Image (tube, rainbow, N blue to C red):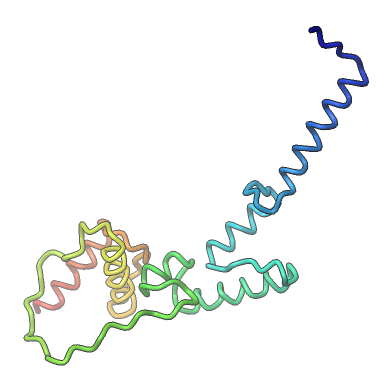
Length: 164
């Protein structure tokens, strides 16, 4: 069977292909929405979830509120906030149960116990130290939960201040 391709048939094929592409692109479940790329990046940066039932101006205002609160807490973005506080912005922190007995004073370890811990707990504990150091020792560490050379130097500085 030989397919006869004339201008009319070709136009029908092209029109159908374009229609299918447009339907796929406009589908709400499609991840590829180029007009939202910058918006999505800003939403992630400030831990804001876009609400389609609100206007764009209202969504932007609410995202700016998140941004202002995160910056007021001393962080540059939601990821730093989470590393420093141990919980995502807008979520309540999980409180540890109070201990009934007081522990005996422990020796300060010469090496930070979470230094090589790449788990969420290790990142959280490292972020806590970085935040504490910045607030109490006048440091300027980036609160990212990563144990790098600057965090190591800060820990050694703290150890030296405690031994005196």
